[in-house]
Length: 233
Image (cartoon, rainbow, N blue to C red; front, top):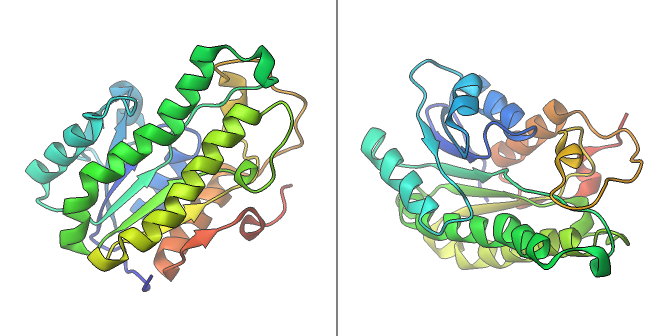
């Protein structure tokens, strides 16, 4: 993927009000991008908006039509889309035997199916702009851990999809970045949809992770593995 200048680029961040989405928005805005904020909580999106007139789109990534909502809103305001960052996600803890079926379903719906539906809907606009996609996976895609089988599997699936999309979308001129950050202090572990988080070491600063992700887009990287984020504090 070629190097990119993000000044003036229209970039949508799904999960913009989350613990990682927020610093990604800040890093993009600092580079002069027009950031479109997307997520399920419009009030929280307003708090993250880098400018008073920033476009905010309320959507539920678990719905296939969420991508249509985003594309329609972006097209009406800007007429183009230069980048899509999917930074939304949920987590669950516990052995597979102790994990409810609906929790497993929610993990894959939010962490895998939703992002794929979103990329599918955004592909025509990104083809026109020769844009980019960033899919935020996790270190568990590389290093599976007991007690996190379902969550780790969902992140591994997303990472695998990113690798395939890198090749699929190359002909359209769309770059894909698979990022797999280590544990980051986003607060997600405290909002698990199932189980209780074990004692975890101090994670990375979300601002450091967000900056690294945006720098990878600028550099034209295809992936940022866990080791590419450096050690945690």
